[in-house]
Length: 441
Image (cartoon, rainbow, N blue to C red; front, side, top):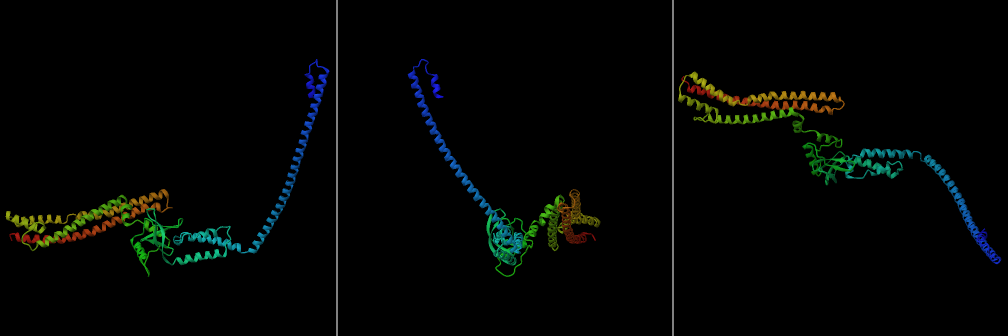
């Protein structure tokens, strides 16, 4: 086709020689073109043969790989089958061992729960970690593991009867951690610096709580810490701290009196304080008056710091100033004696009134507490006693406060009145003597 292209462009007026030359040129070029195409065809065939050989090699490699995979799969299936047979054979041969391992795992879990709150863990931290491993389903317990499990139980039994002193970190009330000397009494209680400690299971630490039992148990704990041997008394909590926590949370008499009685309780306390002040004032005054009376008795000259001296002075002045009949003198002397007796019995009626009002206020608190209790029952029912405890506490505490205030005030009133009557007898006796002395008869 290429030489036809050139023919189309030849000039129409070309000579015959030019035409033959052109034709020869076209033939040569055609030969060269065919040689070039043959060369390309050879290279293509060679490359195709090489690629075909590579494909054949890959197919052969794939066939070998598939054969190897089939062989491995067959071995895997045979191995799994053999493993299943061995597993069945092991289970058949193991017999009761699997039940033993299962029981060991259950025992390990139960012992861990039992010893989780033990005070011995604070002395020996980390001693129960192997129980987690022993309780794992994947672990087959060995004979050493079973012996160790038995040793833990025996150790706990032995430690429950020992009093041990050791050093351990203690969390102080302010949150800081201090290394203290701790005395452990069995698995029940631990003391440090005369204070009861609580065990924190999660951190294996001992806590020094802010709230502590009353004074005597703490004194016994301090004595035990200082002891070097022998027998000593100590307050133990068999519940491992639960009872001590309740005792520590129990309000003392001061807190009960100041807070649980409510507004009525405050009135009763104020009444009792005022009554106590009156009792102290009147008792001191009566003692002073009685002493002055006894000093005045033998003295001829009157002293104005006591009732007898004032009576003598008043009658002496009246006698010197004016006379009068015996009836007038008796009336005047009776007025003086009554005035002195009024001063002597000052505050007695107030004490009697306080002793009467205090139980009535306690009864008022009882009524208010019962109303509060019934309101709680109406709202929440009787399922939770704590909801009713506030009203019951108010009812009982105010009654206790009223009686506690009334009884001492009543006793004090009787005592003071008796002492005042004894002094009044001395004053009346002195008045009779003065009447005989200054009368006309």
